Image (cartoon, rainbow, N blue to C red; front, side, top):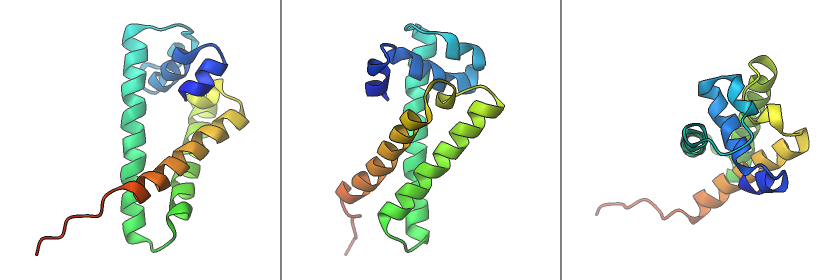
Length: 127
């Protein structure tokens, strides 16, 4: 997300858009770094990514499908929710980013979930 923000010359604005889920659509219009809004947006972004990881692990443990299918499903679900929020509430990344940029963000999320699960240490089994 930071890479797309730097390409658009407004790295903080994307995190302000994430914060708009809580603070309302008016924070999408904040272009520069605002301590309260941007820091909250970064924390909310980390929390939502961790939540996506938890959903990935729960679904992966219950559905015996390859990890890439589960990762793609979680990322696609997140993208649908983001698009719905953008169109219905005027909040989130879908308000700012083009469909292609949004697709890149959620593709990276899905790949990160799969790679993170692959690199995670196996659970400790007590003898």
